[in-house]
Image (cartoon, rainbow, N blue to C red; front, side):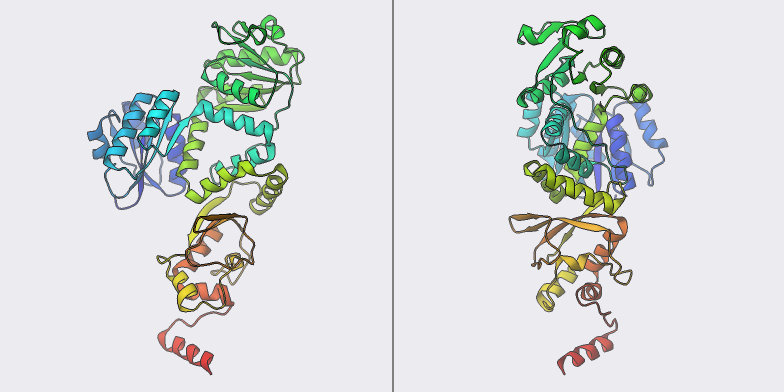
Length: 447
């Protein structure tokens, strides 16, 4: 393979989502899965290119080598199989064969997560921890949470809905790993909680827990569902979650309901019951993986959002919505370094007029038409500046993170690959193309 590609280990629900997103972005990938029927799905999938695939156990280092983990064009490996020991083996193989390769692995167990991290895994995705952290942020700073979701979503999708969970008494039905992460998030926000679970939970205070399945009215009333503001249904069985949801809503129609959906095939059922938010395991893992695969500047910007105020996030969200009409924008990075011939001209050969961020806001391929884009971050050395001003003067070595539409991205690519287009952006004057006319233009400037 002559193009950069990702090695996707596991073609379940998460793998399918990631492959579809990569395909829409014209990024190549190779798939490994142990199940023949899934490999057949890859072979029959309507991707833009023929995706190579291998049937076998991704825990086998030899198979990973055959699939291309050692290939210089392999830019990342994802261990997203349903077996976390297999994913751990993938992390170890990546660490041994390609220590600097981007590796993203899924785990449900904290001990295995720590083990993966010790082998240099760039991103360990614990779905349960991720949901708990996201929900805590939604309660603490709903506008920041919404902006984070927009920038982490798949380009071209409609904006994800804004979630503003109410504060008050909450009922959690199901106390597995999902329920525990939610309990932790609510407790850290000082929220009153009552937990229902069919198994004994000796570590919990009996005042906030009772043993039941949580699908009947009696057990829900014991938990305080009548005066509760919210309900989490966290069982690993969709039928139990839907049953609990329906019973609770009949008792308290005003509940804010968050439902865990385990199987993608039950989408229509959950949509019919219309909880305020549906947490789908495959989508949570896919979004977390995509965020790790995104360019480092976007990951840094999303990380920095946590320290921002809701008012700041609300204004930026409004700006992005107006810019992209409620569609998740594309994102890209402009690097003004020695590998960029136009940047070398702009900073070293002909530094005046100074290159500014505003020069990236007009098209160089459509006669200066305003571009639909926003500069989210400017990195100079070790310093990151969020939402840099249009009048900021740039320096050699700067990196810029932009979001916007495809035309803006194309214009920036053209601007950085052609010296004449960079000059046009800075001066507004079309540059002579032939050698003789460039000489004449240079002579005219000297007289």
